[in-house]
Amino acid sequence: MKFLPATITEIVRQTQPRQRNVRLLLKFIAVLALMVLGFSVIFHFIMAHEGRDFHMLDGVYWTFTVMTTLGFGDITFNSVLGRMFSVTVMLSGLVFLLMLLPFTFIEFFYAPWMAAQAAAKTPKRAPENLSGHVIFTSYDPVTAALIPRLEKYQRPYLVLVPDQEAATRLHELGVKVMLGTPDEPATWTNARARHAALVLATGGDVANTNATFTVRQEAPDVPIIATAKDLPSCEILPMAGATHILRLDELLGSFLARCVESSAPRAHVVAEFGPLLIAEATASDAGLSGQKIRDCGLRARTGLMIIGCWSRGTFLPGSPDLLIQRDMMILLAGSRDQFQTFDRIQKGNTRPPAPPPAPPAAPASEPASVTTPPSSAAPVIIVGAGRVGRATARTLDRLGINSKLIERLPTRIPDSGFDPERVVIGDAADMAVMRRAGMLRARTVVITSHDDDANIYLTVFCRRIRPDLQIIVRATHERNVATLHRAGADFVMAYTTIAVGTVCNFLTGGDLTMVAEGVHAFRVKTPKALHGKRLAESRLRESTGCFVVALQDGESTRITPGPDTLLEPHHELILVGGVSDEERFLTAFPGSRIGSRGSAAMG
Image 1: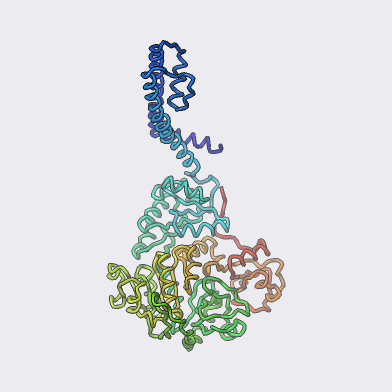
Image 2 (image 1 turned 90 degrees about the horizontal axis):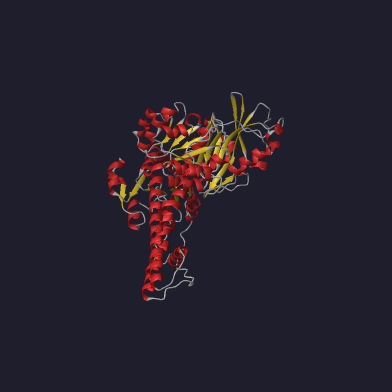
């Protein structure tokens, strides 16, 4: 009932459709009324022919009982003419009352009413007191992944949806939508873009340029993050008014390349907090596989702290007894000098031990498993020569790692910019194609297709052929990350994770950085309960799961402080932990979080 006034207002507002529907409905009712009146008159003539006399209302009563097929039987004809007339009235009732009337009612009254009710529920204007919100120009996988993060940090948002049906569907799913098209200035006025903390444009390059240019008419100062697929768009979008450009394909390709085991091992920086760097390194590259953290001696040799390890998509905190496996990705924290020391030490590392023996032979109907010691000169196989695949290959080139691409569509090869001899044309699920690409001697395969179903299929195929192979996979949807790990992938990066991390880092003004999926580095004030205590006495790692990776005292920063470090009231702590670890810390020490960018007022 609370939507009744808004529904009536919406119906009244739609003048032309409403008038057309009313006219058609009234015409149908008029035809029905004339039909009932005509049948009633004929009823009296036939009854008079049979020598019987009835009241005028009896004719109307008989007509309705026959047309609705109720047929009480209290008034009937005795003559053949009367019974033929009864059949005619009954058939007319079947057509007009039981078929056309429901259709007409639904088409010209019920459906418009429901459409008006749905339109009344879908907001066309943001609340007057809404500020500090994020405005999305479209609903896509990036938007869907960001919304739960924004809700977690109580950050209001709006998703612009141009289509009423799509807006209603998303609204019913609990998404905060606003009906409007990004290329209309009135849309941004209604969305209170001047008071927004951020506008995120995730459509195509042309649509993003149009939306960005339109936003600037209404909100000259609002920050705008726009995604770009093509290199020329990186120059055009800033001209239109974008403040930050995200080339997700390039960033994703760079990440996938960093996961590749290399013969020149080094750490790859994934986040910075002033002088504090957080980096990743594969366990095999770091020469730490098979050792516990307490026994590896990494901190004594380099000063770096092991925050934790990734194992098939699961983040394992860096407890002293954690056994580092060959297929793990290690998360490290330290200063630039410490990482340079790490890289110098690792240059002398040899390749990891020989892979395990091959499993028993497969049935004849299945491709046999092959275990081949990887050669240091063997190429990395990249499945897919699209934007992500080409970005992965370029990053590997910069790292000095040889790679070979497999592409099913020959038309992509001229646009790739690579030597045709470097690209194998064919389906990666074909064993002959994989052999031509060097599958039997490769150490790593990187699967970059945008189709998650195909990626799961290829992951299972590659793992079956080469159980010792390092498999790195791109995921378009976060929901498929766990499935890809179960299929046999060693490392998986969701396409949306990069955008989520960038936006979260921006909104928090640098006080929270998404290091990796589900792992945050965040800055807090030293809780009062820890004033005057030494770091070892705080037991933060044991009680919350968070690691103190740096301590800030004014302009100076102490990287990876030791256990005897005294915590003072004026200190700020930089912590790293999983999402649940962060929540435990903020629950145990409320009020320690440092404010984020923009206010967040919900309407």
